[in-house]
Amino acid sequence: MTPVVLTLFSAILWGLWWMPIRWIEGMGLSGAQSSIICNAGAALAIAAYIAIARVRPRVTLRTVIGAALIGAAFASYSVALTLSDVVRVILLFYLAPAWGKIIEWAFLGHRWRAVSTVTLALSLLGAWLVLGGDMSLSSINAGDALALFSGLSWAVGAALVFSDGRATASALTLATAFWAMLLSLAFAWLTGEAMPTVASLPAMAASLALGAVYLLPIIAISLWGAQRLSPALLSFLFTLEIVSGVVSGVLLLDEPFGLWRLSGGILIVGAALIEAFAALRKPTIAPPVAPPMAIPSEPVQ
Image (tube, rainbow, N blue to C red; front, side, top):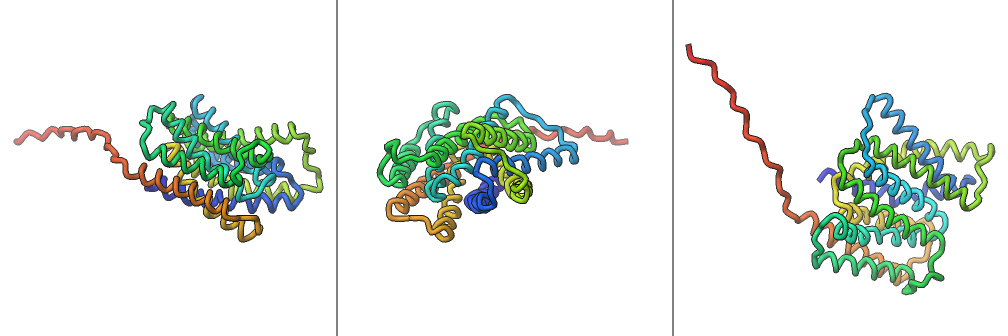
């Protein structure tokens, strides 16, 4: 249960991540700029830990690709929070459990069960309601598109990390933060954003500290859980982020939260609970225990 409890704790912190992002935006940095510097702070902090603790980092090609995709998920999610409604971004991200179920079935060899059909249908119906019953491209803005991409990228990356547990958690965390920083840089370059000036030094310093103190622990916990929990269960546990993020967004930002979004949120959370309980009730088979070594007795004199 330890990975489950820690994942739920990190989900609450992810749900509140919009607050420091909006705070830094108010200090003069865009979503992409704050993502660059926050992830740089997280990468520097974990690199310092690896050097001081003399940890031998170990990664594989599969986990490097998984870290890159998870880094893309974190980066696009942070940017999306500044381009669209917080509530809308959080709920659209949580198509990730639906992607996770499809990936487990198509690529990891998991059996497709009746409960999988129910949770997938509830997730998609919930997303349709969150978008106001309109799934046309005209109803999706840049922040919505990034939120959808973030959920898909997270689901694929988590599947790769889960299917190859040979990487050390610290190395995986460093790779993820580094890739998130690079992809945020690429996004800023593609959108023609100017680099921060000297006037932004206080905001940059705050972003570096935020990355080391706030972002790094939740990235590390998320990845540690991704190595131990199946992608679908992991994504569904993270739906606790919906509760913390949506409630805080509605209360503090006074964002619209009508019947459509409420109904969609209930369906998505309901799908999460169904899948989580189904996964936790699966019987686990303990690994075979080697017989005890025979200890030769001393000859009796």
